[in-house]
Image (cartoon, rainbow, N blue to C red; front, top):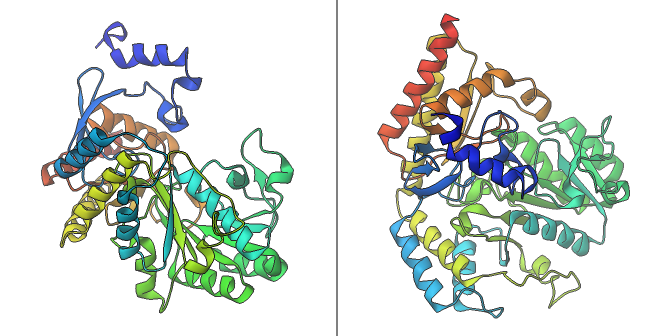
Length: 437
């Protein structure tokens, strides 16, 4: 195809004249991997079609929400019916109550929940609530974890152990992040030092239990247990950011996996997004009644949103949650995802390519290195040039993975064994090319 007939390219040129970088969320611009973004025209099941009409096997799934695949009949029917009743009311609806009930049924650490419109909004609100409920200012986050683009959370690690972080975005004044402490993921000694130095001032510790913006890195069980112990000991709130992992890795979300390994384990607050909206703009945060009742209109912590609990979004989310709660859903999804990462690992091994991979439920990640990394500095040592070559090699073969080295991937219930086999075969062909060069 010549550039003059590439509709993705012409659309991108039009977009760049109107939208910063030509995209409305940075990673979509392909700047990390080079080349032209694919402009999606439609999607169905495990596939989408771009502006040129080319079909791709989709391992992004809107960055996680499409756990059932695109255009699931039950979800589509629920959304169409809700749209006929009205797009937005600015007043409560029964469906908001039903969605809250469905979320709380599966996440026992939450006794109450507040619906919002985005993961950033939910994370920002959870931090405000943690500060309001404890009367403290400082928060802990971890290098490589992304909790949305709220000012206080756009922070990278400081220059030494237990030092306060530095803003990672222009426009964030130093005084806004002066209360944010940034530590290394899975580093128990640094965690203990931070609490020893600042324990009485820490309102909350926010963590992705499986960090999906380092590709796919798990918090170890001993590390998570120590997070829980230190928060309890010092009166800080443990805030689980499950925007990505919520209902994606298990019906009870990632916290249910840690509860299996750590007796009595529960976070104090949970942030949810993506899957609970089924592809619509919807997120939530919740926790015990005593903490959640600190929110307005009952308490002094203010949070509001015109489109919170949107009737079309709640219909989409509710239909999605009801489908994934059916018996056997996660067993099948997890098996399909494991078959993908095992196949990729075997293909890489056969070609002598350094490779490691992991998955949980319908979420996966892989690294072009021999062992799974445990923190962000190690992730940064992976072979970026080879990843870019793999990305474009798969793209040329009709397979769409995240256009960035540091993003997790997602399998849906709509992916077939044939999709997995085609993906593994394509990767094997690329790996063998590397082996011969």
